Image 1 (cartoon, rainbow, N blue to C red):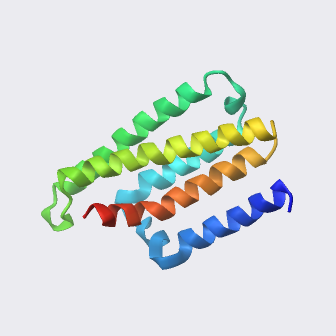
Image 2 (cartoon, one colour; image 1 turned 60 degrees about the vertical axis):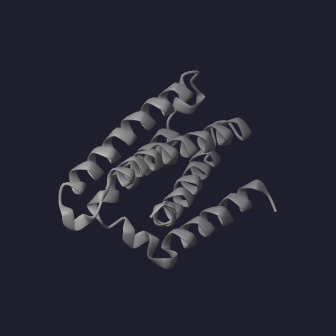
Length: 145
């Protein structure tokens, strides 16, 4: 099987995993919208010329920092309402998971660019990695509880 075939299979598998067990339903709540937004931003970045530039890694780290601040801020605002049951550890975990999502998507994009420069592979690898992390986030949060 070629790399293209494996990539398409990985996209299908990642989509299935994200839709399985209600993980997708998690992202319908506003608290998790920053994760979807960050995934979209990274996928858009992967379609640009940015991954070819020498400053790609620095860009990914800056976006990860901003993403962590946004996700942490959203969780902090949600924690003010006691019915949500969000604690300080949850706020920190959400911020770190947002940064992890962005860094993993950035690394996958860079690897795709190195493997097949200028092709759709880098965007597909970015999407696969983002969907896999999105599918794991609810499970990781449950493990922290």
